[in-house]
Amino acid sequence: MSTNPERPRRGSYAKGQARRQQIVEEAVVVFARSGFTSGSLREVAKRVGLTPAGLLHHFASKEELFAEVLRQRDERVRAAAGDPAEHTLVEQATKVVAYNQSTRGLTSLYTTVSAEATDPQHPSHDEFAERYRSTAAASAALLRAGQEAGEIRADIDPDAAARLIGAVMDGLQQQWLLDDSVNMTAIFAEFVRGYLVAPRRG
Image (cartoon, rainbow, N blue to C red; front, side):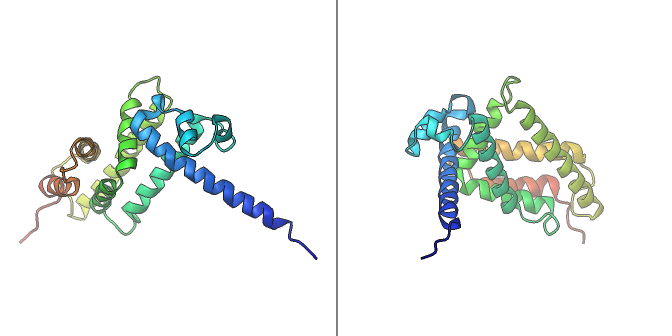
């Protein structure tokens, strides 16, 4: 009887990937509650039924695990925003706000760690600073395109408005995490209507 030597390896790989994903999902909970600095690999390992040494078989360090958590979070947000070629900046931002309101764990994670990262000694300080800079630059470019198309008010400064959009989104997340009666999507829509969107002609 012949056997397929590839099958056990494939099964082992799939099992390992499933375990890695389980670790990432539990790390979201731990980092969202305790932040990167206080969130421990020991606690993550305990939540998935591993020893700390066993967890390090899947992720070499807390930094590597955290990087994967953020990577997956970013992927989900990009998917929620939709294709930039098919949606305006306002549409994308609105979709992200709605998505964030449906994923408390990831929203809490981002809010907690971005606040932590204001410390220049934090391992993610430079990454978060660059994240905000690059997002603002991309948003400003889209706002300028929206002004040329007559969709965005002509009297706003795109660079300042880009930073303001991020500030409003972050501020709403903070308030919502403290009080879930805050309707982020409705309040963001009011901000868009009152500040960003050009008035209709005619």
